[in-house]
Image (cartoon, rainbow, N blue to C red; front, side, top):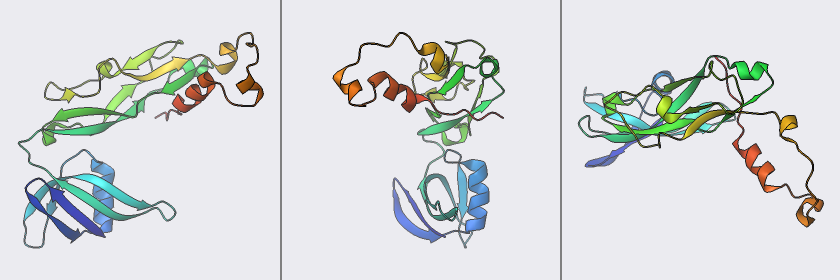
Length: 194
């Protein structure tokens, strides 16, 4: 599989990597964990995955870009959030609205976490939230995403939100969605339970 290695102070290199080996490593490492590339002569290069081109129809990886990093220089990375547990709110018919899928941090490459776990088992009532600042973050890791940013919130069901219908506006009569409805549906994302 074709690949590109690039980075500050390094000439771009066109290389090829084993698709099978890369898939195995990428599944475990993701885009924010340091990977060591080893060439035919035994030379080693520390990289993180910068971009992966995928054929979504066939489910195969077409090419990959590796960003060469120095282990003694801090980098910024987006760390995925994994939702764990089961929220009692869903048993009450409430809706979980996932606002963030990842948190941006800055740290030395070896200190970047593979993922953050958000335990949703404490979410029972409408209006409850989990914030970025609620995540367990090592002292060596600096948050770039603001700590007061909401990761996930519990919302009431659509039926409970409905109130007395407002007088029809010309835009509503024409069938255009209201601003509030368009925003709500853009924010609601299903939550995967583990």
